[in-house]
Amino acid sequence: MREKRPTVFVVDFGAQYAQLIARRVREANVFSEIVSHRISADEVARRAPAAIILSGGPKSVHVDGAPSLDPHIYELGIPILGICYGCQLVAQQLGGTVARGEKGEYGRTRLQRLGGSDLLDGLPATFDVWMSHFDAVSVAPAGFRVAASTTDAPVAVLENSTRKIWAVQYHPEVMHTEHGQTLLRRFLHDLAAIPAEWTMQSIIETQVAAVREQVGNERAICGLSGGVDSAVAAALVHKAIGSRLTCVYVDTGLMRKNESDQVVETFKRNMGIELVHVDAADEFFDKLRGVVDPEAKRKIIGETFVRVFERHTGGISDAKFLVQGTLYPDVIESGGRDGAATIKSHHNVGGLPDDMTLELCEPLRDLFKDEVRSMGSTLGLPDEIVWRQPFPGPGLGVRIIGEVTRDKVAILQEADAIVREELRLAGLERDIWQAFAVLADIRSVGVMGDERTYARPIIIRAVTSDDAMTADWARLPHELLARMSSRIVNEVDGVNRVAYDITSKPPGTIEWE
Image (cartoon, rainbow, N blue to C red; front, side, top):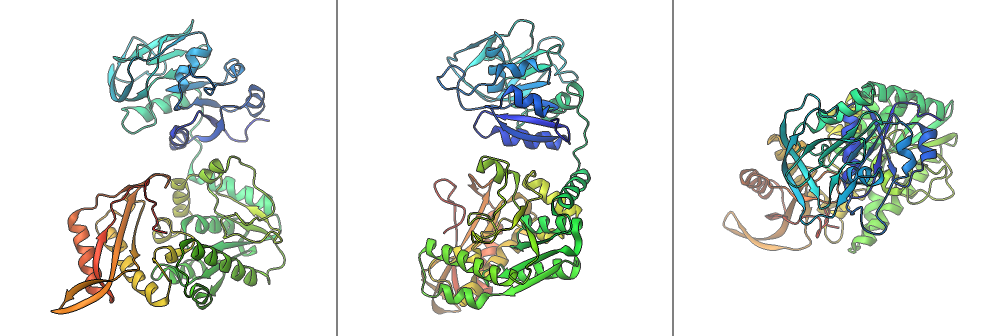
């Protein structure tokens, strides 16, 4: 069965490269899907992708158990581009030689073109590329042209246009490589002849049609968290089925300042979506009284959310579908693309009970985060929601060290609002993955207005990241940190000291609990 839209298979050989390649393909307006290197030639032939890209990987092609590719895939006539490890695999499997490296080639390297090349057509004679390899192709397979080299990679680009197979030793998907996206577009649009049709408008039209086909004339419910994923999923499903969607927003009392009002304003008043707004703050604070262990807090918040959600969706007895904002990275990490029909406790709505049988509607499961943000803007969601930073399910409950109380939440909301406002005013909001305040369960001595104080410290946490799997502490300007500190100490009662967390992940985590 041919793919319903032109699709590029990105074959995953490990490391971090496959997701980045898939995103770069989509930036070229072509749909991409990450597949395992164990995919068979029969399955590839059945699904008939428009092209295949072999990713990089951490292994050497010479080690036992190194990932390989069904060699019959090379005979299908589907355009193939090998990158780094993928390049070496092409050479090895098709009769070339991959030399065991005596020294690696890492970082920025100068590439030298060697005569004509279909893949490099239009690119300069020399340009900088990003290398990350130890072994290197020393002899190209018979019938392949060597189109470029570097000091330590004699076969840096090889190609056989008759067989529709091209390969590069370097990484065109990283921003450090000059003309990298140009090369990918050359492969996709010119050599593989794939039209640039994967646009946001086409994505929305396709997903609206898919939701209508799945839901039919039934009703659906969506648990809004206040985050961008569930918000965009709700807006998309509402566009598809209109008033047959009901959103439920459980206000835990642990949200950021003014966040609940913003969610209600956006969905109920501005977008006309039926919204059940449940103010359950009292119940959450009662359950959290006296609890200090982080895991215990998480479990209590999750369990309470489930019970509240259950009570307030019980009246919607005719709903058959539950809308979730599952994204493509979630699907990749879970190891599959097939969603279960029965809601299990591990789903990201908060862990609905096993006996609540609703079919999942996950309209964003093919999309990356940046695509979701773009869709949200196209659907008319305000920037305050579309560009909202990731926020943990337990909310401020895991940014308060120790017992969670109303007073502590009020302190943290004010401090956190200052951190985010100053970041926005500095024009850095979209450069930072997350920036927030943490309230520590200690007190320190200070002096304010010639008076001794004994109050709490606020810790500012700001990190940069692409996927939250790893993160680095953000090098915020000292002047910005000084403004944050001055405002927090002067404007937030109960705080007399501010610290900045300079721990990366690993060894730390992004959140404190």
